[in-house]
Amino acid sequence: MARYLIDANLPRWFSPWSGSDYEFIHDIGQAWTDSRIWQYAAANALTIVTKDADFSDRVLTSSSGPHVIHIRVGNLTIGDLHRYLSNVWTDVCLASENCRLVQVYRDRIEAIE
Image 1: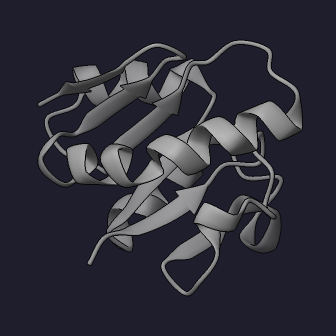
Image 2: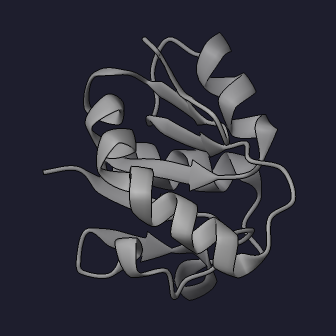
Image 3: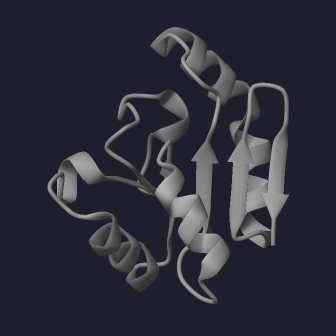
């Protein structure tokens, strides 16, 4: 089963991210660089979930490393973001199983191998 690393730029309390399959940068290394986060995720078979474009750029130029889910919905209230992700999270996770990069937009989900 897939496991996920939620980046510091996303809330920890979202209900789709509860359980032992989720780790949070807030808990393990808030001061970590993107490279350190990348290495940790790769070493621990974690998919990075982030709003940071640096990770999606890196996955496109790397032949190995962790999978990335890039949340690209623009500015939403926390409540709207929670509702939206709650509705699409299962589909996002399924796409991420087979694709190294999943980009989540307000109107679509794009998966790139």
